[in-house]
Length: 288
Image 1 (cartoon, rainbow, N blue to C red):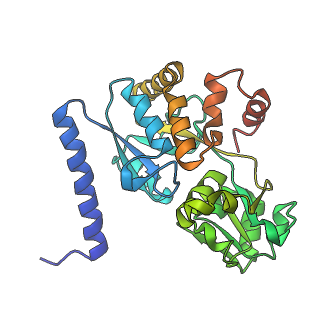
Image 2: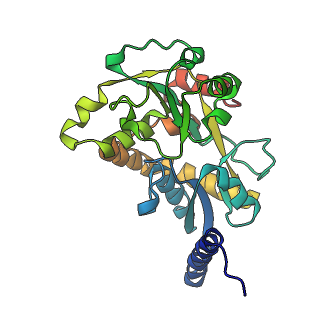
């Protein structure tokens, strides 16, 4: 019998671990719902501790409906494959019309509002995506696919453009790049992990955030069936009603300085009077 290649063996072992975990949950009671999440969006997903703000919101929503969940942390480009192959029941980076899940939440759940981040001492003036063309730019993996045609064209023609699976925020401080493209909460989380706690407030203030990218990239959740979708939506409504989601927001704000911006669509859906101008803008951009 021929030995399996190392990569294939690793994949098989990972699948066995996942299936074993799901089976043990099934033996204990109801079968766990398998949820695919991007592994590189800290503090929204924290694979090492099976947590993160996004993970905790999903877990709390399903828990309110007495439904156990198991999270599968994957690179963003593998989440769709995991759903299509039947490994997971919930896809957290779907959009209506993608023809992947065909059963979506009735509203977007997450809003990735990426910005161009620079060191304040460089005094860079960025008014448009075109201004990035002659600068050293580091972006998250597959940014050129997610951030629109103009950004993709800039990335294609800029020889100093680079995409990385994990964002080393200190590249700006070390002058290894001129611009980092990132969601600000993710950028600050990585920066905090790379800096001394005593210096972190000062470090945070040394950067500028340029809002020159498409306003928002929204994601709906996709589900195996409508019953599972409805259960999740009832759960989200429940944790807004009982205040549990606010407690989670406070916890992550205190621990990591995380804002509510990633989940503004949920606030707009369940807190109708909350920030009406922001909600109006979100509604206009929901199909981007």
